[in-house]
Image 1 (tube, rainbow, N blue to C red):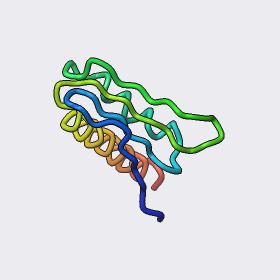
Image 2 (image 1 turned 45 degrees about the vertical axis):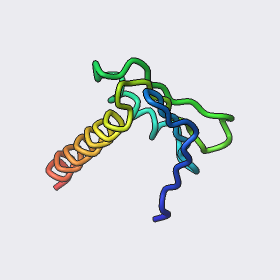
Image 3 (image 1 turned 90 degrees about the vertical axis):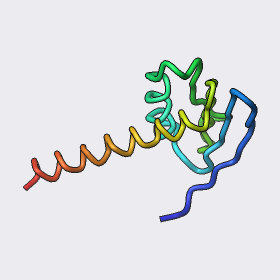
Image 4 (image 1 turned 90 degrees about the horizontal axis):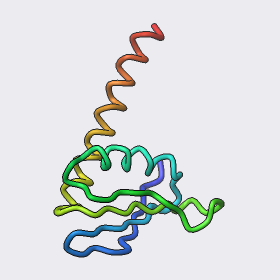
Length: 92
């Protein structure tokens, strides 16, 4: 598996923007869905420069966007692990 590359576009007090190189926007949407569930996040979105380029961007506005991003990633990871457990049980 190829290592993921991330480019920081903006990292200011309450704003964070990152570009995920060679990834699908669906992947970033999973993270953004968790971000918008947090009351500490005032804005979260994913976008892309061009539909044929696989470099989606995550934009976050929060008091501590780094903390909120880490929390969202952990929540996505936990959901995927739960899905794996259920799927493994169902596909015996």
